[in-house]
Length: 327
Image 1 (spheres, helix red, strand yellow):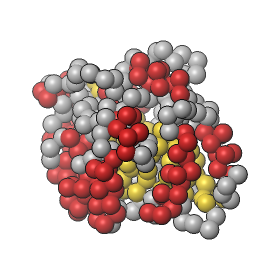
Image 2 (cartoon, rainbow, N blue to C red; image 1 turned 45 degrees about the horizontal axis):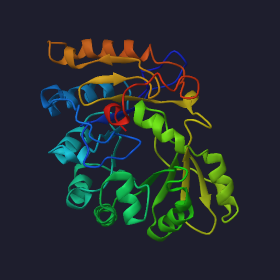
Image 3 (spheres, rainbow, N blue to C red; image 1 turned 90 degrees about the horizontal axis):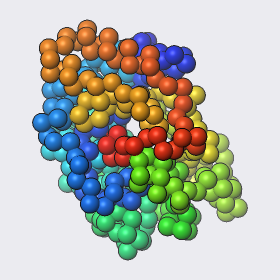
């Protein structure tokens, strides 16, 4: 299908990151503040019928990739059912999931049968006590989820590590070896100044260009590619199957190739992770809008997509937390 969503900078929008909840069973320091409770009320959540309808319209407009995110998507009941409905929609060719994996052990096989083909797992430390300090969660649950996903046949399984100075930057090489051992793909991510938590975490910012140079001292890194619609720039570790991706919104932004928008659990379409541009779709859905009306609203929204974020220039301007926007 030819993409019909072309933004003012001639970028084809073919990827929607769909947040199914703003709630999470972890409290990662850079994502959600301690004690936070200002979640969307369930009455404001898009229902599965509403989500299916909106994603169906996106599919008609040329979107082919959907990623289920949160918060933690598996906190919401019935996600395998929703996945099956979305994977069956015309035009949707790739359905993936971002998760912290704490609940993945019980859902992995069902998600695979429902049509989820790829999984990204957030994992910032391999040390139990440090993991608990960063997330307030248990590392053993994540490990159980990862092994269940591998047994269920997910390929690839991507590990996302936010590298933070003085927090976990001494585990970079350990994470490489872990992913080589278990045949996972590894992506390093720079911290982003999203809301007060993100700006606080930015005190621990690590430039991933430096991490790459550090890895080059130990490994032979070759050019590499991976399927998917995300922004990572990949290398391959010689002599292994490991691909390492670098997601660098600060040191090397990837705005020129941005192909995505985010739909929050309450139906807000965010056009850029680092800007406040947005369009509310829930009122349309609940006030009798036709599919044609939704198409027009989405096309008009894409026409407002900004050229780039301004994390470096105006880090204070994004007030919402990452968990509110969708991963």
